[in-house]
Image 1 (cartoon, rainbow, N blue to C red):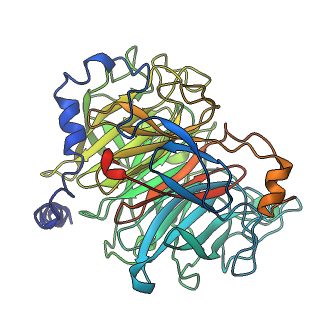
Image 2: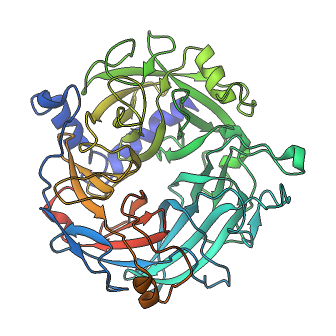
Length: 504
């Protein structure tokens, strides 16, 4: 299996379209010159100028309201707000979170299919989804999290239906190379004492609700899952964990690497990342007793097996984390988004900070790049691409995506930032030297009159939501449309514009 993994990676490299397998070379190349990073080795203090220019309020093509601030030339359309009626008769759930474009095709190749998470605990939510995991009534409620499918044509919503329910706190997830979505539960909730089930698993979802089984992939671990990314060269699945200062970094080696729905459910080996030569390395901040001292530093990584991926948590830490730690595994502050592109995988630590204290205005976040070894499948490297040293430079990035052109984009998850473009959370792009710039801002500040004009009075409260997080950023396959959610009040946007002016 290891020899096959190496051969598959070599074949991928040799057959990829020009630029695809090396799309991040510009990012890492700029980083490794060190000259471009000299001013930011201790973390970035302020955003750099965006290649797309300054931001301005832009009217939504659907509602006519100025819901986003974007560079000139960009347009967008809103869709699928919390409380809207779905085409399958259900109601759109609240708390839109992770999301991915899983396939394109249909009418003239114009249809884009997305699967979207809803980070909900109890009902009401996607309780009528065809596939259900936990259907027990617990403390008077059903488990309410789940996923739905959005079918979009030319930037406009055509169809919206549920695919899985009965899950808990579906935070993020990740797309697979075979056109499905892995949704992740961010929880340790155990409902067995109330007639329910254990939670903290991942589930595979299809755009065809009849194919989605609603069964957890237990071998991928029970933990505070955040997101996953699949390496198409090996079939390995990389996983992040969002549990403050007790977060590991994992990968799952499937027994069956067939690129098809259901292969992951056939089991495999969960592993935890370890810094070579440093037992229980801390990657919480720069310096001190951490294994990383400056932005641009590269760490050698190896992997240790997790024998009991379904172990119960102890003292607030997951069983897989504790087993990995006991074998020398590394610790991140709070692993969030992860995205595969070409030969590399970008990973967000939302609370990475120089004093290691996490969020609360001090640890503002970081982006790591993991690169698997081309010669030894049990090794790789992690390079610290970016770290924020102030709130305005990085406001706890959460979800991450990479455009087909190789540009990295993250979603802010802190409180509303006041910057040169006013208040509101941001979408942040990154230059080819790993420097953050502001691409967009949340400008949702609805009145009762706005809700009435949209025909959505009573669906949610009229209030200032500019401080609520962006989530689920994902490009379509040709890179023409960026889809992204604002978690509350719960709305999805399709953004289009002159992407070629920058690196996104």
